[in-house]
Figure 1 (tube, rainbow, N blue to C red):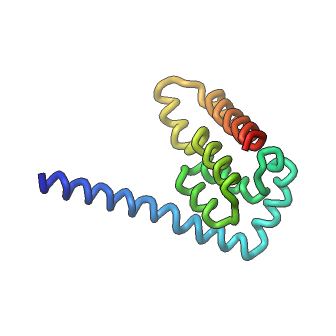
Figure 2 (figure 1 turned 90 degrees about the vertical axis):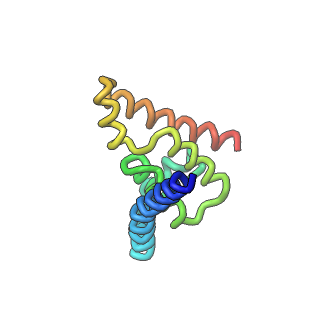
Length: 137
């Protein structure tokens, strides 16, 4: 029993370290981009589109990060920008539907799923969910 507990703690600690390796660098990068004005440029560019999702333009950075890398990188971006409960809820749902597309494309390829179609479907469903949540929240 003690060995099982030790193994559980070891696995939990390794997972924690893996998450820290992702979250801290992404958080620092986004904070740097915020202070250099790059986030404002991104926000201004995407604001006309993101308004339909009830999100500020800088939320696009969180979506792209989660879509291309993973959920945890997206969460690091979310943590580094000022968002309310509604925005975090919408982003969370969108990221839950479509995340880690590059990594998961390899899995889909192994099971003979059309990568382009499945990623388009996931992205469209994610955007549709964000739009619907914006209307009902």
